[in-house]
View 1 (tube, each protein chain N blue to C red):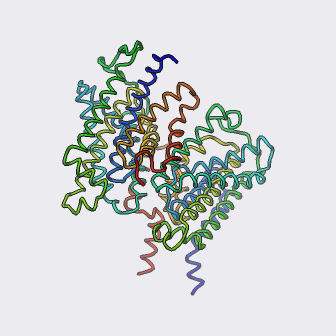
View 2 (cartoon, each protein chain N blue to C red):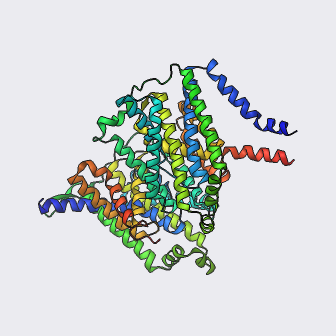
Length: 287
Length: 312
């Protein structure tokens, strides 16, 4: 294998990893604080894609459309938290899981009603078309843009969680909710905010995903399994673990796809079984 | 006095059984096929209820057992010329072994882990069935067709499926009211306390998974015998989702509820889907409402109504 080819595969593996990070970050964040495994995350991703593409066309402004659609998806999940999840806190966690499972049907069918069930291809905007030369090999500008976006979001989340007072409350809430409550902080508001943020991240991830898979009602639920596997491998409740696991998944899929194409579709399972076999709580999860 | 209470309690059930026995005499072929599907999926939902309702663990890969049962029966009948009845011991052993493997691999995780890992395992098995390497055995996406008839007429098949449902129902009833069943409920209610009393929680959950897996496998092989073909969809996420819907809508932890749920879901799939394109959305809304307000499922309405009448 030439070093050029190696660099090329490595770069596409990393950009795949960044996409996986974007897809799973919202789920990991919501789970780490609320302990709700939000199965409708895939459907929110799909909604982000449809709404984002629609708004970019309607507002004829790329960044504005992306941000507005992500904010709206965030509000959607915040409303779900406020009106539905809140009724079930303290009970059997199974019911929260089943609730989000039922939401999949509502969200997926709503998209079919509005935009139809047929697949829609998405054109890249002009400034994301074309390639640049990296190390003597062509590399799509779109993937570079995704690198930038992933790095920006990772940095922003790191800043939010580690350098602000709100982040301090969230981190404390992940450790011990009762203590945060006892200190006189209304943690329910923080729950709603974190759900908004999770929805926001799902919206952005969906929009990015649309450039690769096109728009279809199944695009989100198809990714749900990847998201769940990444979060389990990273360790449920560990946000940084999910980021590392996403990069590992990207690497595994791209390199297995090159050497053993028949097994590429199973790459995420292989990684999962290896990691969970060695450490059942995931990479950075605690017992 | 005592007799009349008994009579009143079991009267609706007896009437229902008599109606179902007489059904094939005056119904069309199509209704019979739908009814047989309801019986099969009723058994499948009962097996899921033992896991979800009584043991309190949510598997999202239960179709693994259903698919295993169907494929073991189909392969043995087609490739080795076994009769249907001779394949059943293999189905039981196969499903028990798979249940043990899955249980040992996943039950030590916390419940949410178990859910996600079983979901991944289900997809893994589905890929195993449909990939190019196993195509010559499993027929890939096309499945396997042309299983020999196990009984001469459709009516006999109907009664076989109905008897199958009744036998499994009473067996499951016996299991959940045995000391084993009550221990499972105790573990579901308070795992920590059960552990302190001295029960080996992992072992009991493993037993529940194996029992439930065997029942699901038998339902799968019965389905293969009735449809006379098997499809990889039997092992897919869609089958698991169906059984979850049936169990939750009907009412988990009641055994009868999941059977009612199975009837409801299958009738809706067969009849509603041709009238409404968006019936799944209504289903989703009902599902969410049931989870929020009626955790006992639709059978909970009946119990609540009866409870009120008894107290008044």
